[in-house]
Image 1: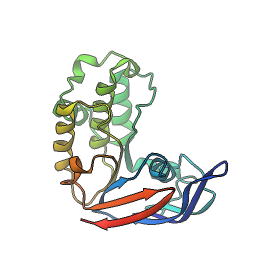
Image 2: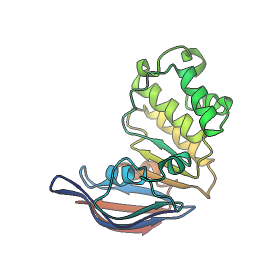
Image 3: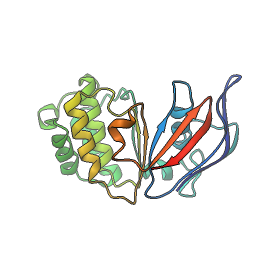
Image 4: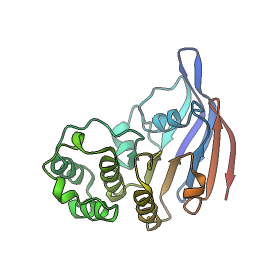
Length: 212
């Protein structure tokens, strides 16, 4: 379970989150929508413990994302909109994820193949030097392979071509229904078959929260 209670987060005088209260339970597959600056990415980063909040309370499976961040991120697979500047080779990255999260290297490689990425040919190349689309495919493959109960995707298809998007959605169709999936997206039509709830945000507030 993810629970935010009366959470406010300011950047200088601007409220990126304004007294937000929302809960995500097992089985929730949520499209989080809204215009740029609505607070969507801030919401996710608060859940991940990237930001300290000004007031309120955040709990992920009972843990505080700031004070107990290791326990929180251990159980979350996260795909950022912009891939991080990882300097490891693809082989080193896959080995690190496998050892730290308990998933097998084979599962990552297999999921990359399903995404249309032959990662075997890129093993000795720096992740940083891959194309944007290749980075995104590998990060998606890692996130789906991790034994996480929570998967968070921030515009995951932004760097993917139409075929890559199709492969991504097919990959998600086999994910167990007891997980929490959060999608920050502007393309509800593409993921409508994957979600059962739509949250719309604007000006740091949850404007609507509807079950599908």
